Amino acid sequence: MPLTVIVGVSGGIAAYKSAYLVSALKKKGYEVHVLMTQNALKFVGAVTFETLTGNAVLTDTFERKEEYDVKHVSLAKKADMLIIAPATADILAKAAAGIADDMLTTTLLATSCPVVFAPAMNEAMFADSATQHNVSLLKKRGYYVMDTGQGLLACGDVGSGRMKEPDEIIDFAMHVFKSLHDMAGIRVLVSAGPTREMIDPVRFLSNRSTGKMGYAIAQAAINRGADVTLVSGPVAVEAPLKAKMMHVVSAAEMASQMLRLCKHADIIVMAAAVADYTPETVSSLKIKKGADMTLNLVRTKDILSELGASKKDNQLLMGFAAETHDFEANAKTKMNKKNLDVIALNDVSRSDEGFESDRNNIILYYKDGTSQNLGSESKTILSQHIMDVLKKQYQKMTAR
Ligand code: CTP
Image (cartoon, rainbow, N blue to C red):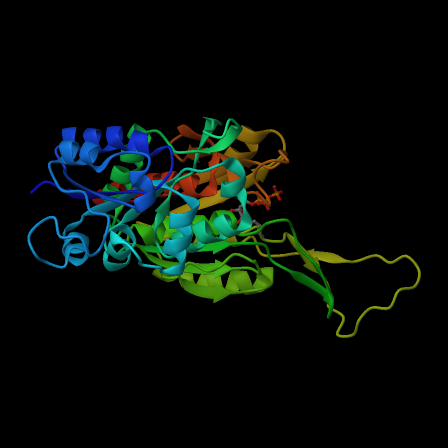
């Protein structure tokens, strides 16, 4: 049985590229159906897609072009994959709000298949906080929202906001499809975010970690059907819907949760930025200002080293190395000292990536001496690559 792919076309100039997308999907042997919004019809004619797919293009929920059945429900059930390309700001907003007022949006609500959005719009519209909020809400609900490409936009501006090229959309969608549920039954434990080391009731020592990398890794594992536990320091990021959440504040609390939960994990990713030092004493009263003062700090537990020392057979352990210099040497030393299988080197000297950013740059070093540069990408994409690697390494380890 060929896969059934529905392509939803909404009203943007990139709709002309969807004709190539549909044609390429057909050439790959998929059964393709196209749903268009009223505005999409102003950019490309339905006949183009009907000729390419051999199927009627549906726009209006009450339209009866084919045999009598509740079309949006039957198509929604039949679909193995729904690709919305181009996805305008309007369709992202409707999807986020659950509005269902035409064939595309009703099908979207009714389907349980994986859904990929390929946004296309003016750069400012994409950057607008309403659109960004909708995108993060959709991702949180398990939809796959692609990044946009750079280049000349229809409005004449040069910037980001262009729809990704049709071949990239197909690669992305097929990667999503193949990777779905290939980690079912695998237990993944992830730590994320900073820790807070209290000085007195109102002050603490912490760091710039936002938790975005660890949360993206947890989400990538959830998307592949893994059973995910996320131990998180205090962050402002919304928790992935399907993660078992464990909220902690201090390094000591994170250590006790991680060392307890590690016994039930197959893959452990220590992405948290754990404080290396904590005040020797915590004042129960607010410290009043006076003369200059000295804060005595004592070392916290190195959680990752303890996880490495107690690592079970068939348990895969990954850590991060946040470095500003001597990158490779520092990362490899950490990997060996802490008995890790993989370490992700992170150049934190750059102001545009890493801490407090949606992007990161990562080079992975493996125990066997090899390495892989994942480059500079969004944390979502990097996490998908990291999960690919961890799954393969885990399979190799357990096959022995
Ligand atoms: N880590 C940990 N417990 C700590 C400190 C760090 O588990 N008390 C983990 C981090 O989660 C990360 C890895 O160890 O996965 C490396 O953290 P990093 O801050 O880069 O290095 P440190 O080991 O703290 O060494 P240094 O600060 O000297 O670079």
